[in-house]
Amino acid sequence: MSMLSVLYFASLRDAAGCDSERVDHDGDLRSLYLMLQAKHGFALPLERLRVAMNGAFARWDDVPGDGAEIAFIPPVSGG
Amino acid sequence: MSMLSVLYFASLRDAAGCDSERVDHDGDLRSLYLMLQAKHGFALPLERLRVAMNGAFARWDDVPGDGAEIAFIPPVSGG
Amino acid sequence: MIPRFAIADAPFEIAPLRAHLLRAEAGAYASFEGWVRNHNEGRAALGLRYEAYVALAEAEGLKIVEEALERFEIADAACVHRVGDLDVGDLAVWVGVSAAHRDAAFAACRWIIDEVKSRVPIWKHERYAEGDAAWLHPE
Amino acid sequence: MIPRFAIADAPFEIAPLRAHLLRAEAGAYASFEGWVRNHNEGRAALGLRYEAYVALAEAEGLKIVEEALERFEIADAACVHRVGDLDVGDLAVWVGVSAAHRDAAFAACRWIIDEVKSRVPIWKHERYAEGDAAWLHPE
Picture 1 (cartoon, rainbow over the protein chains, first blue to last red):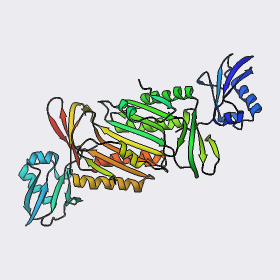
Picture 2 (picture 1 turned 90 degrees about the vertical axis):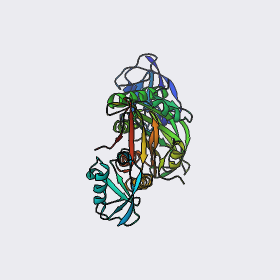
Picture 3 (picture 1 turned 30 degrees about the horizontal axis):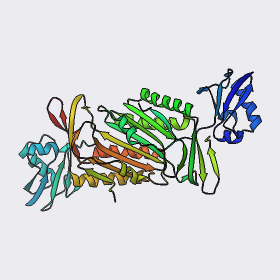
Picture 4 (picture 1 turned 60 degrees about the vertical axis):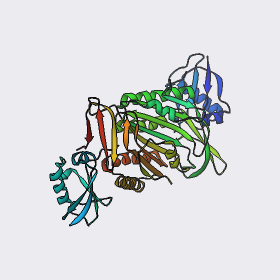
């Protein structure tokens, strides 16, 4: 099992009720989101998100190593 | 005869050696320029100029009335 | 050294950022500013909050400005985006570009703000006159 | 009342001109500045002088800004052009446009500077590093 830090922003943070949490997970980033989506009831489907690992954009089939910091990136609205 | 004030700018002023002069002239603005071009040796052909009368752009076949202020407008280079 | 992209958590001055882009060989400067409007998509807005994933936003924003320096014939460019609570009329984002010629200055300035809006992890939370509020997650 | 177009015979501040364009309903602001470059068409330049037929330049400049307000979906716009002696790095011309959306702000800003350059009776006299000087009368 890998121990991961997961960061939440914007509507995902509101739905999770926290900025971040520590999660034990095996598998890729896709399976991580699906697991957390089921846990917190996130409305945003995976297709509308991007994902980042350790401060850089990542792919959904990347498998995080122990201690990785993961962030799910909802559609952005800066500017 | 109409007594006109003629204003010179940029290279036309350098060639005329003055900012403005008073000129007696009958006829349209085209003939006025051709007369003054001959007098001062202006290098710019009429086709490259615009002309203004009393502070507004005018046409070359406009005939100035007595007391009109005429300006020949060389190609502009602001900005 | 002023970074070419920054996330600012408080109001910032444009003048020193602009001055930093001045070059003796650059005759053109184009800039864009986004201000908080009193309405969005037909709803009256009271203000908003911008939140960023700061580390990734700064990395991605810098990448955008550096890409602009490659893509366009420009001398320099910079961008700053606010986060935190903003009122109507507050400055949300600034982009400045200097170049020898205005074509490149305008094109790069436009490209940078478009890329920032579509790529940088910043989110807008709007407060409406009716009392509700919402995160904007455009399709 | 600040006029929407002005000829300035001394350095001017951009900040109050920009502030005048701010609107609660306008979320976008685009601006352009022309600075005196140290070169033009391959020749090293020391500085320049701008001369205007002031009465006609102000009338034509105002007409350009008013045409922009008709042509584009913008909130407000303004332009100031320097005359007199300028050094390398000095501000020669400023255009500012506010609008609800950035498309219109950029398009109008670009249109105004293009029209000013082609229509307003202002002439540039450049001094070159070799010691000579010339009026610019572009083809």
